[in-house]
Image (cartoon, rainbow, N blue to C red; front, side):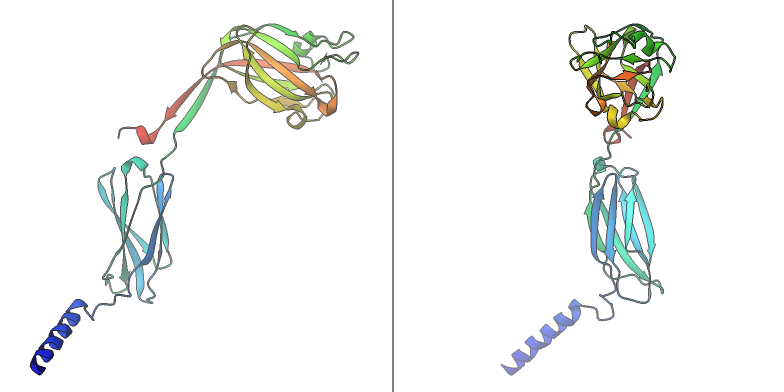
Length: 288
């Protein structure tokens, strides 16, 4: 029985001694490796081994779309790396990190992590081309009878002006409507204040229509906040457009006056009309 116990202990000892190579430093390795998915990229973070002889960390991965192996070396002072130029449609990327010391020895174990990046968003490009379209008619629903005729708003003279009613209370909205010689899907305009602009509209909608019955709101802004309160201050609109529809009529639709006034006035208004197109590049749905 004693011999049997002796041989059992000997076998256990041999198994234990064979399960681990005492000549290898298993503490010399990258730990706590994580991967953070970003748009078209993956950020790797790791903790370095506590070894003063560490020289760099080697990152190995296979670029799925390029079908190519990559190796990136990061110095002892780095504990993160962003791999960009990726696409979510590539699928999961696997990264293997290996520590290398100054003598060229590699860590016995490598850290691995897999991750799929977030989808790259489509790139939308908007283009506009000025069209040979003229303003052929204009009118208003709110004309002050004693001064400021509507024609002065479009006469190119900053010293004249248009004025909505102040001798009586006209209801809101108080609008100026322009008719275009041909349907367009884009427009820009600018206005020039009368004096310091205290009589500017408080809030404005830009509406569009083809029958003057049904109106679509394309844009809105605060006249109080966006139109500069300076002498003959100028407001320039952004490009206003509708990719789905072309329009013949546009309204500068003031829904309130600045500072609670019951009217608004303006020295000048000018419109330019455009054909607007848009292209979409979606790398996640492109064929390489």
